[in-house]
Length: 328
Image (cartoon, rainbow, N blue to C red):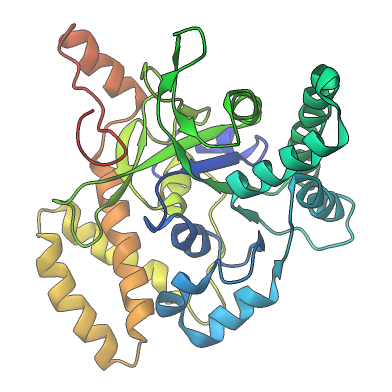
């Protein structure tokens, strides 16, 4: 099911290569797990602990069983290649996080190449990044990465360098951004309930680098990649066995919110009702979370509405929120 009339065309394309960036503790990894709980997860030990409360112990153990430790980008490429070659079954892949892996990769390359071999070092890094993208395409599965945030700043010559994902420097950042299909930032909206974290994507922003080749999100939206991809027409994660009911509840919640019922009212009624029926609280929250996001996306304008709004108000375009929640 999708809310996008262009869904058949979108579904025929390659699965997306995605990166979301933001401050630590804003929910990037949790959203990744909830969006594609059947993913392979390439991470360091302890990275997934925040998801346990929502998914519950049984599903958390299943998620952990699909994790693999990687210490740099070359190891990540090797794993994705294994999926592409059929050694592992095709499943979505989460890389958590690309900042740490890119830093480790650059450290290795710095040790391998002397200072007069800078060109060769960056050619090697380029090859690694391109190999990661190529392997993901051949695997025909969505690949999602998380990253730390890099603020906008100045280079050595005083020129403005746009912020965005952090990858160990300006050159590494630019090389990763070039191969990505989607780059979203995370910012905090304290007026947003029940969770303040939001995604932002404004490709025309002069301070930060965002991308969205699927036009799945324009401006700001809920921090829920599953529902964003659903609206865009494909690449929706499979519900875990026994939790198929999450979609039915999410749809009912979305209908009520879209019809004007406040989210707090819906939450106060639906949460205790689901728990009384035997649902785990984290799963009930999961269903409500998806329903709230689905309602917002259903009533939001698309890319064409955004362009029209800007055309009708030239010179009066609202400044995008900074990723800390306050205008910089």
